[in-house]
Image (cartoon, rainbow, N blue to C red; front, top):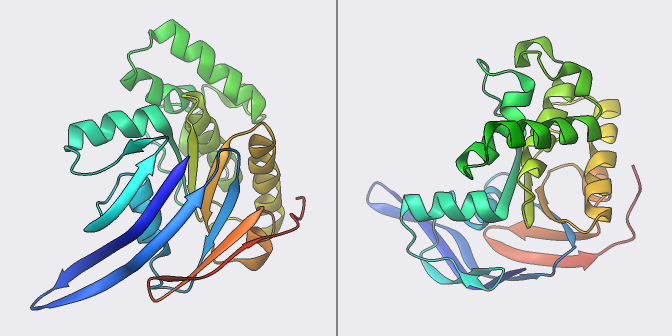
Length: 229
C-alpha cells in the first residue's frame, strides 16, 4: 500500500536549512493500523503530510498503491487525494455553513457523484457513526465527539484506500477518545489501512503497529498486541 525509500525533507529557514526527515524507509501493507509517534519536531506530521500529498519530499521515493508520487501539480495531487485518501484531523475541519450531511457528502461532490447519490451515501455513513438524526444540524450544534464522528463519516464516504488521522483524539476527553478509537478500530477490522499520528501512548496501543520518530529518523518500528477500545 505504502512504500517509502530513503525519503528526505528539508525546509529553508532564512539562510539555513532544517533537515526534518532523514532517509525514512517505511513499508505499510494493506489492512495495517499504524501509529506514528514522536515528540514535537520529530517529523511525524511532516511525514503524514507527505503521505497525504499535502507536502512534497526533496529526495527519495514514495509510492502509494503502486503509483509513484512525485512532482505532482496541485490539481493532480488533489485528484489523487480524492481518489486514494480519507483525512481525519484533530480540529475536525468541518465547513460551518454546511449542515452535517453536506459536510459528509463533500468528497463525493469532487468525484462528480450526483447530488441524490452522494446524499444517499452520506446518510449511510452517518447512520454507521450513529448520527443519522443529526443529518440536518449545523456543526456548531454538535459536541466535539459528534464533530469527529462527522469527520470520520466524511473520510469514509468516498471509500478511500488509505485513512490518515492526525491526532484524531487530541481535542477530546478520555471517554469520547475511547469511543472514537473504537470506531476507528472497527473501520480497520473491515480491512481499511490506517495511519495515525498521536502523542498519546494509550491511543497508540490501540493500533497494531507503532513507528517512533526522533529528529527525523525512525528509531523503532514494532508490531504490538492491540488494546481494544
